[in-house]
Image 1: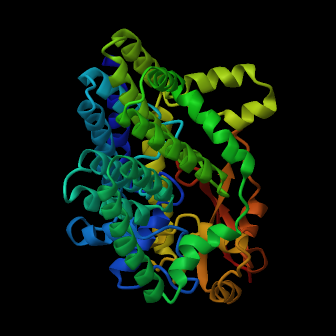
Image 2 (image 1 turned 180 degrees about the vertical axis):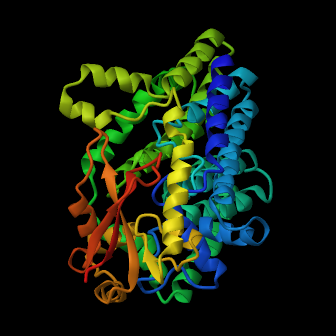
Length: 492
């Protein structure tokens, strides 16, 4: 229990240090806040692309929740991250409760719940970000918990379907879990399966239809269409299960041991959820421009399966169950990944390497980062007229300026064979922005993309703007390392 408690406390302390940081911890956080800002201002997030706004390729629940909370808590990084932290904590509570209800001891349940927490670093330092993933995970955890333990009650399957629908509208990768839960219900109670399927069809299908009609079809374009036109990285998808195994190998052995000894319905259910988690992680890893957060569903649902398996093994092999989970928690911050990287040749090593999470200090902002952010926002506020910060759009809002689309939107549109919004090209040509901030990307090996490449990512910027000043902007600590490097002004 000590190893598990230490892992949870370690992550909790890091989150407490990160939640109030007033700038991007990850380069798309501000873009998510701009989604919520659109809703607060009464504007749609699914509409024809424009210089003002283009939606990310996600379903809408997370920004909708932020917009609903804005009148009480304001719109900013801290309340947005608080939503993610609460959702992530709820997911761990559901995991703990799942194992306890299956007969596991407090130690086994705590060990299973600590496994995702211990994997905070290798899965991208993501649970506390102003991003969709933790809300998705919390709702998904609630859906599979209710779907199993309340399956024989009148309202349980219906409630599970509502929760699963909510999880889908937080992130599209809920679909494999919706199927896994449906199969489990069909195998144990046809009546429950029918109620679940009917509710999904009526409620989920109704919301999909309404969003499509209300947005003149743009919801379908963003939530599904853009992904279809992006290349799928088959190799990255195939490597995801190996990465997951290296993170949770001792837990996987517990699951194999339990399946060899007994195949109780709850262990089979956990195994099915784990398979859905691995599939979801592989699909996420294969998506263009994916990051290590794609591994979160795999780690979480493998932890559920391992906890249920350990609960089954406790009666006959309590020491093996407890030690295996303790070893899994100890390995989840990346120990086995580190060992693999030491013995593998360079090419396969690059395919499996992940960030380590034993020491979380590299994920924590320093006072100098806050000072750099303050200085950048002050420069934006002092600039006359409009400004453009394509990699950190919410910084313009903090400076009292009008926000614009995100650099990720440009990549999404171009990658899907669509044109960049014509009004953005026109605004750049007409020198609409008195100041433009561009970022360089810091690669894993410490090298940086060139300034010319960074400027060239925005159509027309090289032709109509010039670098006036080089700066050291606030760093990001999760995801791609995009850091403000240059201030651009119109060419004479």
